Image (cartoon, rainbow, N blue to C red; front, side, top):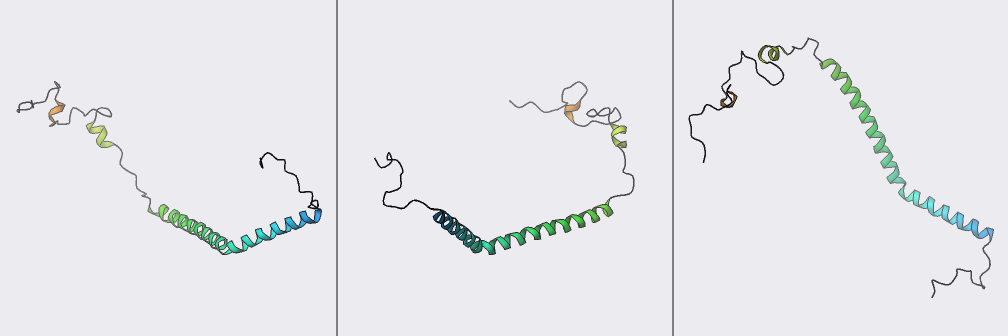
Length: 118
């Protein structure tokens, strides 16, 4: 039955005044500031770690950019000359390639001298 009763101030309590609201607000602000002060060392350390990581990232990127540019080969890389010489298309070997794999015979059957598994 307690939950069904309307919330009304007790008749013996004075009404809520502006000074009560100001005091409640000021107490809330004070508690918030105390919480910030208690956590301040953690906030400072976290901020310093963030700034340090950001600085390290900048330095690493700068060093990587410098070393990467100087390590690139300047000579012309070879083309696909071997593919052009020995291949007829992307997956077919050319006619000038000797085939020793038994499953690549022209008639499609393997040239094995062993009996099948049974």
